[in-house]
Picture 1 (cartoon, helix red, strand yellow):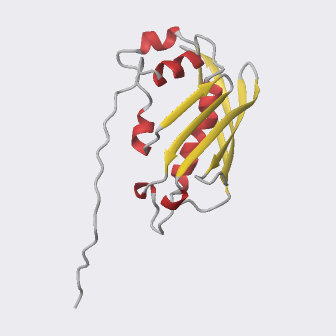
Picture 2 (tube, rainbow, N blue to C red):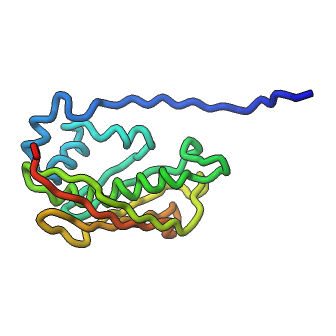
Picture 3 (spheres, rainbow, N blue to C red):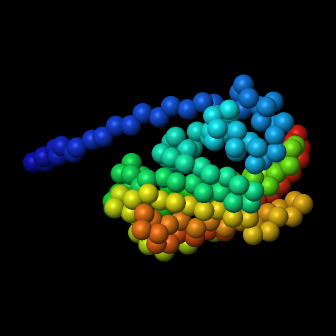
Length: 171
């Protein structure tokens, strides 16, 4: 005879603004750093991924971005640690947004690759995760960036490098 176990459940509601709908013209008038600053100042909606994952802060400057996110249970894999895909998304966000800050008006970009190294386990006990992305090299068509993820005690928990392709809008 089998027994049905009862498990405690949690719930979470996420809302977001669809990117580019009403503000696409305004977005394309700004350079990359201006776009991110306008999002931080509430003049343009921030990316929905920030709400989905619970990112709490984005601080851009030219060639560098810092993203923060508290580790939460809804990030967990089946074994009770923050899923590697969540960590990778945080690293990708920081590295790619660092490249984003270097874009001229009329330039777009996309990630070509992401190489991640997981160095320590991450759980809710890790506290506030801080991810710093920096541009290593920016060319005309590609950019190389890196990101470092630290836990609430400042310990390095993951590292990534990313290559981004840069291209003109409309191509």
